[in-house]
Amino acid sequence: MDYSVYFALVDGPEVMPTPGRPGHGLMDVSPHGPHMIDRFDGLSGMARQLLQEATAALQRRDAATTLQRATALRALAPKHPESLRLFAAIARLQGRADDAVALLREAVAARPDDMLVLGNLAHAVAERNLLDEAVDLLRRCVALEPTQPAHALALAQMLERMNDAEAASTVLGELLEREPTSVPARLALARMHFMLGRTDDAVAEYRRVLADAPDTVAAWYGLSNLREPPFDARDVAAIERLHARTDLPDHARASIGFALARAYEASDRYADAWPVLVAANTTWRRRQHWDGARMSQHVRATTAAFETLPSRDDDQRGAGLVFIVGLPRTGSSIVEQILAAHPDVVAGGERLDVPTIIREESERRERDFPGWVAEASDDDWARLGRSYLERVDAQRGGRRVFTDKGLLNWIYLGALRRMLPGARFVDCRRDPLETCLACYRQMFARELGFTYDIEDLARFWHDYDEAMRHWRARHGDAVLEVSHERLTAEPEPQIRRLLEFCALPFDERSLRFHESARSVRTLSADQVREPLRPNTARARLYGARVDRLRALLAARGD
Image (cartoon, rainbow, N blue to C red; front, side, top):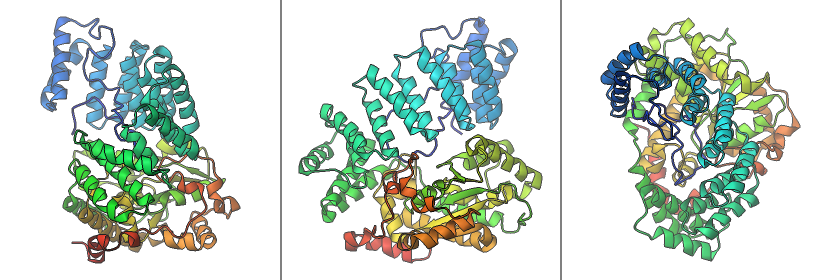
């Protein structure tokens, strides 16, 4: 368990990459904080010492000392804002997220104009998916300190997480009026334009950054992620010069490597692109905490844990929920967009609710999932299911169907069948070689450590395939496989099939999904603005260079 900060900013699985972007944490663990106020004001000398010692212990991940000092502090200053911040941190780390929020609300009541406390609460409620409250708190920060760009950037990020890219664009535009040279704001605005399908505006923002700072890796990378990167020979030369630098940190080196590979692809230079792509993946793989063998064991332990548990098909809790699962780059964004175009559907985007609920239950039980599955009662599963429903209720707004595109939720499908037996699951599939190659060509903002190594990718694909075959065998009526190739070859019958599975009447708008104006927070944001394209295969262009991947995918997983 990480004791290095009071809270981790749960930002959602943002898959629109932002290489080089600084951290967003408003979670300063120091009782002195970043502001010119005495955070110790009102504390006795002993209480100050206890708070300092508890904070230091928290920073060095010494749980025993943290708890001992905090217990003593509770007797001396239980309601001081800094005490409340500390107690909230401990509650959060113990899996008592609701208690953490309550404590931080007390701290805000005591110090309503304290940026640090407001920021702590904003990110704590965001973790509970209370995004409206988080936005309100961050708007207060902006109003109190309008000259501090970090507040506006955090607000824009939270609005982005709510899929309100228009509002985020407004915040960023106002920030740029005050800070016209702010590179982070301009990069973020370019990302909002991309999400909203305003590709020309996104390109213009990236170009503005590069005009002033031609070595900005994030701008080149952002341009490279467009469906058709707008690179000419001068751009390729500029990226090559940047790629040749020896002083770049790993993140920048990997990012510019992926950008250069895409630039070469755009010029049909696949022989040049492959070694650059391999080097970029190798660089970034070194920074990943990924253990493929351990993941395989976890997947198999999870499917085994639910092997003998009976289904609750008579219980409709969770009816109308549709979980879209799959590997990245399998067409899941298109499936979500097809459903979102239907008037009876709200698309929830890529959410963290399920893994968060499972993690909190594991912390409460002090046992890792799936070790506690056999001990959980029907009432426990119902409680966890209600927790999920509470988190999505406001966004769902009474619509018939709500989608959750947390792609890794396939790992928890057995748990979700117990939590929400009325829910349905869409298994997004694409040719395995094309899927894995598409992942290998991409640098993701979240940690998807399996995507940066050929062996890891193949192993992960086998894990997914094995697990989904198992879940379909047990819960076939609740799982629909959607082939990307079949969807692009025969859109209307496949879309009708999808809508019928989701208990939705056919609506022509789902056929015209590319006309939707909703924001899309994934790398496919420009792809979903176009009609379906049947010819998206790339493996043939790389020829024998992907033979190793092809062979690993053809073999059975170990």
